[in-house]
Length: 460
Image (cartoon, rainbow, N blue to C red; front, side, top):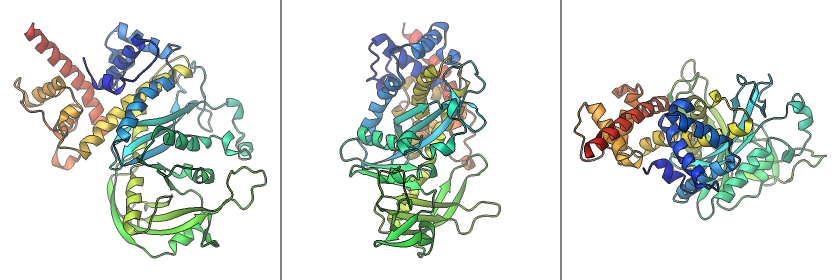
């Protein structure tokens, strides 16, 4: 049966057709029951055994798993005029699995696990297109407590190099006229990243972490924060902040100031740690919530970008794009909570990385379903569902064996799936969230399997 997984992963190549078929079946099974254990999602012992053998097979590399999805992702990207490439790092905690070999410390307490740095591609409207690049590593336990020594190393020997490597990998993956904007949080405020040579279609939008020295018209004028803060407010924008732990969803009104300037390198670099020592022209955008509600911490961003900003509209567009950076945090949330990746008990870090690469495709699919519906609610649901899936969903929701002739919209179908997962669908409830959708998909798999079985038996 043709599924989304067979189409998405049609370019997979493990040197053995049986491995490719197992891969497609595994991704499809895990996506249909994302919260389930591997055993439950697989459905039987043979499929469960096949899943673990796949992750243990020497011909199956994490890069080969990611490559199949990346090729489909790049095809989707090439249809877009502008792409947002969101970079971020997360940690996977496997402290409860002490027998796993090849892990390393992920925090100051020495918790065992892996570090993962991903590049997630979005449309300019915030719809996730897929994973472009990913780096996974385990820290050397022997290097714990040596952070001061690491500061004296060139960036090529630090973990910070991951930001530069991911930028170059993104540039290599997408050729042609598509505009690529790399977006990242304060950890990416690295002088060497801004100085890295980029193609003409590549730009950066980074939240500032350091109050750097700056100059205008070849004259040093002080620090970046003061220099922008002294400029007049250019206008206001209202943005919606999504709910996150410790922060409720709310609309905020933000003032915008911006200034074209050049950031300067460190005062001295006696060891030659930086490849560039010239001022780098950028635009700094100060985003400030002037009048927060009682009890709310005012939102404040200082953004640095290589994008041209000559008007309030261009500055406001940068703020809108930076808002989408939050989606990679949702992506990591789906991996950990929706796919329960940290519950996997595999013998080695290498097997865990293969499983991670597999679940990354599942996590993207869940995120795409959620945000594609919000962007194109009137689209046909067969954009995301097989015919028998929406028919089973329709029959269950409407308590009737007679289904509609015309497929419902994507919005209707996704709301029904969310209802299976506990979404109440009241007017005040807004759009369904990721958790209700992944729970609903788990129930939909059972419903659609039974629907398909019954209708096949009637045709015999």
